[in-house]
Length: 252
Ligand SMILES: Nc1nc2c(c(=O)[nH]1)N[C@H]1C(S)=C(S)[C@@H](COP(=O)(O)O)O[C@H]1N2
Ligand SMILES: [Mo]
Image (cartoon, rainbow, N blue to C red):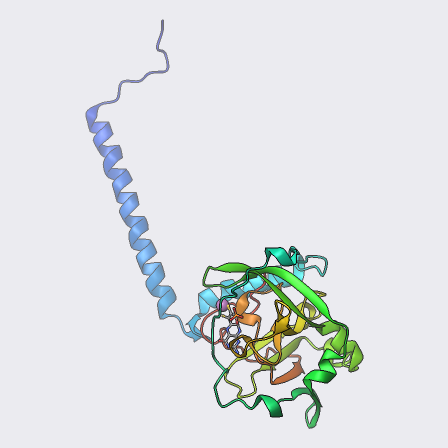
């Protein structure tokens, strides 16, 4: 049997190769450390260094321009799949000084022209249910059951079709302490609701009574609880978690 492919290697050669391998290994580690230091020394853009923000913006561009489709609905479940105890997360903008009796939804049609709507007026529109897997960027998710008015039905009913040709919709809590901006296409998605019920009952206070946003094509951070004002804009409205370093788009 001929071992024609075998080659005698001297221990010196083995030692040299091992040394080379270790040298490359250390150079890569040092490169990574310097790279990380360089990234962190770059100017900040909304809570994170500009190179990291550029990566998030690149993802947003890819997802919003090439991957988003209104037919991409999140999977629908049956009411029996929904958890009875819905987790409560995040209380920014949900202060105790809220006067629920005086609440009206404010819709800014254009600067100086605001529509005020009561909860009954919103409930007069067709009721839509959505049962979906609610995902928080913190890593938990649960199947939850919501009802309300499709944002797209609301836009048609209140003749906001011109406004909704703008790029973004901004939403604030009544005290303006929590706020989100959403690309108009996602807010017009057929699963997006102005939601006033959870598991068939009025929303609890800590889950956004009287009205919250439910937008299954986005992570939890965009599902603003207790809507005070809605407005339309061609530029990105300010966004609470974006300012703290998260992705603006936050799509699923
Ligand atoms: N007003 C307000 N809305 C909010 C938040 C908040 O802090 N304040 N947190 C968001 C986050 S991070 C999540 S995951 C969901 C949680 O909704 P839930 O409390 O009904 O589970 O609400 C979102 N809406
Ligand atoms: Mo979240």
